[in-house]
Image 1 (cartoon, rainbow, N blue to C red):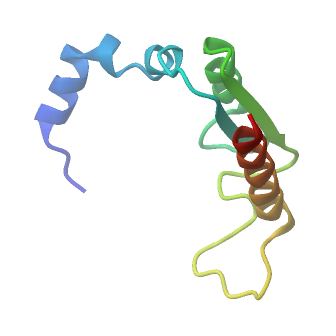
Image 2: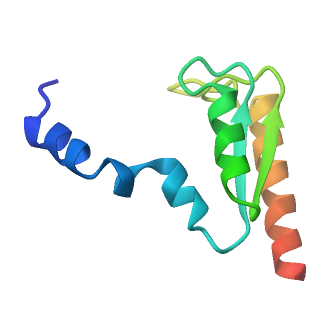
Length: 101
């Protein structure tokens, strides 16, 4: 897939503005970061850095989970993989707690 060079040039010209840690520091509401600790695409340490950048964040580690939490495409089973179910449960708990506050 060809990339337009202007995308890279725009990123280079706006590195600080587009830096994810910079953006994370600016979030003013509670937010949940869910990350598998066996993700080869995004290391767990990246999620830890995001969480450390902002006290409004909460980090939920999914043990043994890869980038897609045990799912695949096309997903043809009737039930969610156990790790993806954990993502749903942790997300619902977070949202329920946020509603109570």
